[in-house]
Amino acid sequence: MKIAVLPGDGIGTEIVAEAVKVLKLLDLPLEMESALVGGCAYEAHGHPLPESTLKLAMASDAVLFGAVGDWKYDKLDRPLRPEQAILGLRKNMGLFANFRPAICYEQLVDASSLKPELIAGLDILIIRELTGDIYFGQPRGRRIATDGHFPGAEEAFDTMRYSRPEIERIAHVAFQAAQKRSKRVTSVDKNNVLETSQLWKDVMVEIGQQYPDVALDHMLVDNAAMQLVKAPKKFDVLVTGNMFGDILSDEASMLTGSIGMLPSASLNSKGQGLYEPSHGSAPDIAGKGIANPLATILSAAMMLRFSLNQEAAAQRIEAAVQKVLQQGLRTSDIYSEGTTQVSTVQMGDAVVKAL
Ligand code: NAD
Image (tube, rainbow, N blue to C red; front, side, top):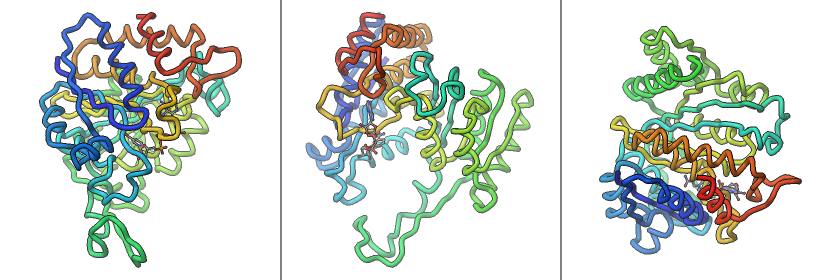
């Protein structure tokens, strides 16, 4: 089982090191190879996704990814910015389905900004389409500027597009995921104003007919944003396009207390996947040893489940994470009075010990 380990920038290196520690403890034939990605790859090779890194990722069963980016790269031409590495990996590996579970751990109910009764027991799954939509439409403002900057520009544009096959395949993923859960799918769009969304809704209805055991409903994205903070437990599987999914999944992540707790998986049709925490490189806390590594450790568990077919090992890691939370160990982002504050490395060590 070959894993490409791409820690990236900022806290990426700190949190991935803890996940690797956990993976090494499992009695599995895992072959892990590391490579540079993001800003550090740009510094070393002049590109955020060097050919050698992409080759390694493509030849692996799974990619364990940290995070990329730093404000200091904001002045670079857009194609050279660290974040482009993720888009490049998604595109080249054909990663079209992003799974973001938002689970509220009982021990962290008080870390949420919502009332405990609204989020206790929360367990929802946001499925975001990753390869279409406005992020991959017409190049932004090409007629106006080619270097990614628009000083004094009068106009800039991005086109939103989806094709029928793109919507069909993510619909199948969502209905099949719902079959393994509570058999409900909410499809989120903006069909009252966007043609792209009308196509999205029509195709969801069509594909839904092939899954008569799953109930499908539709919600406009502005309402979904509201309902997620008003009554999040009403949702089970929420499926949506690339941009709405980007925003809603971050909103959902905060329901659970900290973005530092949330894993994610991006899968292609062959089961190959990229696994990463839902958060970014957190330059504000990088190098301080205080980042929460649990989202990355839980991403490693998702990797074992979805790409490496190791359900038992995935469950062991998830149980170990539950155990350290029960022991009252908290990194600063989830710390509350009466619990014990620990560093990134101490949290990783505690998971290893619990395993
Ligand atoms: P961010 O997710 O990096 O940080 C947002 C806030 O959450 C910060 O206050 C940060 O300290 C905190 N935080 C994030 N992860 C944490 C963790 N594990 N433990 C404790 N606290 C944590 O988002 P941002 O600040 O908007 O972006 C920073 C950089 O990351 C930017 O360059 C952005 O482009 C990039 N980014 C990368 C990815 C990715 O690699 N997939 C995703 C989002 C943002």
